[in-house]
Image (cartoon, rainbow, N blue to C red; front, side, top):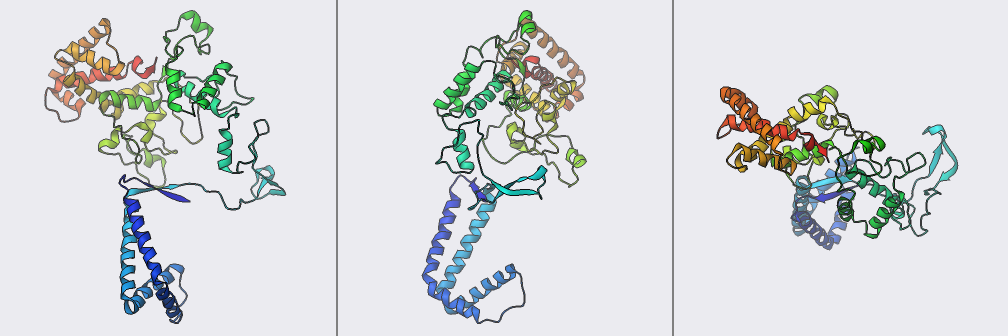
Length: 453
């Protein structure tokens, strides 16, 4: 089954629907004329064997011919209806997104156990019925035995899993590891919670709040546990390398989407539009052609499409975005709620040379030069604060200022190198902007920038 979602935001779809429905209701007033037409049609010569579409087209043609001769007013009404339906169809093609959904069958088909998993060997001695696990609370008798009933069962007040699984994933998002280290397995093969009472309390809070996701995020990030320093004394690191005791704040590398979105945000490029179709940002040329045999092509977007949040990036499971895969993103070929974290030289190459990050560094350099004051020191302090939300230490500031001066001198001597690096037309000092672009690239690649701590 399919449903339409109106993307026009103006209610135009409903207006056209009302127009069509009104004309159809007026059409009912000509029921006697329609009856006479059907009698007339039955007397017409039968065509040779034709398919269903051809027969329907013939009927439409004869209908117009008949009412044009016998009922001009009805003929005019049919013309208006045809135009309204055509306008509705055109509007739907331009403004509506068709979304496939599932719908329960009026009478569920019989399901049987497959012998050794063979689809052609069902054991028809027993019909299988929907049922929940006996180890969990039973489904209420008034719940329908379908997906709706299953959803209601998951959110029963006494259900032991829903709240715990949800808050454990939120905890993992902020701390790197969930209270239950195996978020995909809360069963006998999974690990026990490091703090069972805390997990229970968070679960109850989540349920009693009416499943308020935003409130749960606020509760976690404002906790004393989350706001601890992420510095780890050597003795504690040796005793608890995975921080299961929660004796210090979390410290781990950001995931792929956050790295890209962060670079776009601090550079001022990020487009915060909500919703819309997927987009195709930068990707190595010819990658799809090498992997796909169906001739699909990756068409790099233009304008705002290049700077949408990463959640809108077009994702093809057989050829996932390489810049995401470099940072351990799941391929999405199977469901995964716990991705590993690795540190490889390829990740550094990605952050330094990927066109998206180079573009972000250039845009950040524009901000530094335009908004950072009159001196190199104030500009670099401004850029550092944009990226890391704090001012640099004097030592770091001195290093960056000397670096900018060295690059500025080098680009003054080699103006072509500055223009090649910027790769865009500018009004101003190319050598100066290129030198700050290098500093911006350094800031975006700092360990503090790519690490949550």
